[in-house]
Image 1: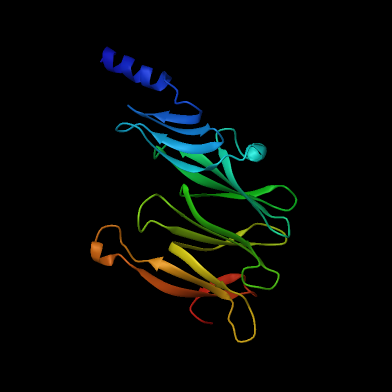
Image 2: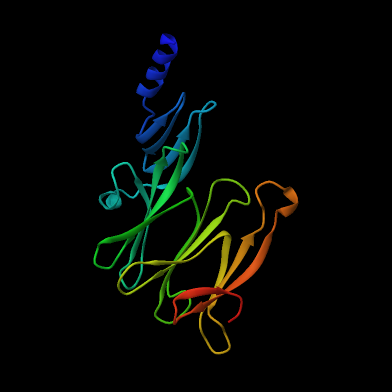
Length: 218
């Protein structure tokens, strides 16, 4: 028992180079910043790591000290979305945290998503004056993509319009003969049965009056 405790203490006390946060449970996992690159390092078994993104040092003041900013987007109206990597101590893995900063500079909300950023957009994606933020992330596995789409208002709290397993494909802007909305490739895999793997194309119509997305053509 004493030997096991001593080994555990040695493991906890051994820092991983460049770490800004770590968790140790028999082995250590860490979020690191080295040479301007943010990585997750996992020491079970052996050492594996993956790159999360380029470190945005100028944005460190916008997020907690144990997070590492890797992406900064700004809308024409002044909304800023800062994506920072953080270490999920419960899951012993890395994730991204989205910080929604309103035009007045105040943080309105945060949202935790997977660590691998696949694609992201911000702007008048449906046409008109409504500002929309869309992001797809995953966890380094096939059929593990997740998409979130948010409405960014002139005032008040941002509103999540859609969260779905899959990838957003194309946005359609309002125009003569066109219905504003977004096409999503929704993943059908149930996580267990291989015969459920696949995608289904779905269209969500943008309702500018209720500021919502509705499945199908309205």
